[in-house]
Image (cartoon, rainbow, N blue to C red; front, side, top):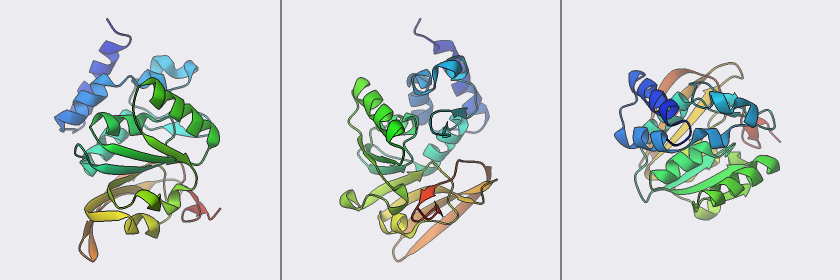
Length: 213
């Protein structure tokens, strides 16, 4: 039996109990080996429904948060998706396994290099760069979806500008203690917005995020 197969099954069962209904996401999360994305001391907790520390005071999001954000984004095969905050690379791999073209930005060089090595090891073609994700990646815009895995004080305008018509932006917005997950869909000259309460992410640092640096 592959390593942690039963633990992945249990994780997926819990995701279903918590309201994740997209079979494609459940199937991918049952397949992707989350233990490859966590630090060695936490490998045995890789399939707990909790965030875990990685390097640079960052975290890998809890499985439910990954599944929920992905379900809100509703990515389709062939769509172009921008991720802000590569971290361990887990969210990017989930999206890639759903058949999307992934572009991902990480501000910490160490995390960027580790994730890139893991993408190569897994045989996935994921475009990545080290830089300020709050300004997006205009070279490849517009995007069918943008997912932000860190909390912003407000929605960065460059990300809204890089959405394709009908595209979706999923981003946690709030203070440093608790955030609302804002789900934004571009419709003509405006945006349809829905908010879901009760999330906690690491802060989004950058020119259009916290610190303004």
